[in-house]
Image (cartoon, rainbow, N blue to C red; front, side, top):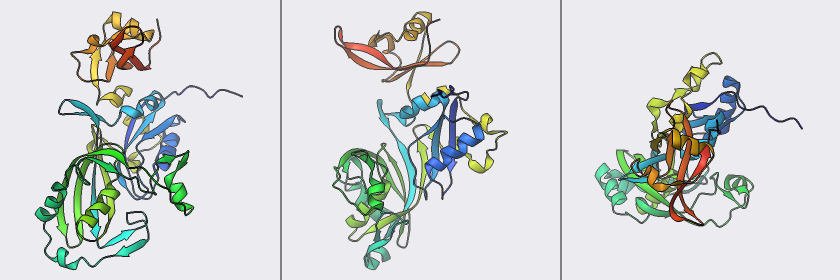
Amino acid sequence: MARRKPAQVHGLLVVDKPAGMTSHDVVDRARRLLGERKVGHSGTLDPDATGVLLLGVGDATRLLRFLDNVTIDGQPTTSKSYTGTVVLGSETTTLDAAGEVTATYDMSQIISRLTIEMVQEIVDGNVNQQLLGHIMQVPPMVSALKVDGQRLHELARAGIEIEREARPVTVHSFKVMAVRGNLIDIDVACSSGTYIRTLASDLGRLMGGGAHLCDLRRTSIGRFGISDTVTLDDLTPDNAHSFLQPVLECVRGLSRFDADDEVRMAVSYGKVLPEATFVNSGPAPWAIVDANDNLIAVYEPFAHPKVGDGMARPLIVFITPS
């Protein structure tokens, strides 16, 4: 069997995904535009959702796991931001506007006197419970999460519902932006793995009825925002390569360490290094960069079986001994 030739194109493409396309559709479009098969994405967006979708090309596909990294209050974490609209008065099979209505509620009394401040008070009053802070969230059946090798949304389409364990997620901020009758516009920053549709549904229940989500738009992943994106309509086979950002941009959310020749050589052999090497560079993991501004590795803390704590090992190495 012939081996696939190594990737010839490397970099990061930051796309503003349009509604009506799956994330995989966007990957396929990018493959055709760039003439490169090795393309992957970070963080699935539903077909109806829009916004930031990060595509790793070539070597950048090895760095997809780091794209949502940020540092908040000196601590490394993951963060994605979304805007959307909570529709009060009805629940759906998918918890968003794409599903069939399963229940309706007469919430006219509360809607008639609803204000931004009232809704924000409900959100803030549930810190560390359902909507804000460190919370436990049950993934919806329509999610792309895999359980025993099968994606939940595939089981849901087959009419199968299974028990799902609640998972810890963090909602960094939950802001109520506007109230328009039964519509509540929200802006949420959260850790990876958080479902905004579940937050919308939970908010409806806390308000004495039910709700679903519509008009979901992802406004950022890690340090990448809408201002970094290009639309698919603006991409052509002639210009797509010019929109690729360097591989180094994939780790803009990590602490940077500029390697001297000695560290560069050690990294090229994949050596374990003292964690103290990176002590002044910020929290782990560390992006190791050479004198030519090329990313050569990513390192993380490591408990060495012989030496013990205080060591660092490579997660990824891009350089070979010279």
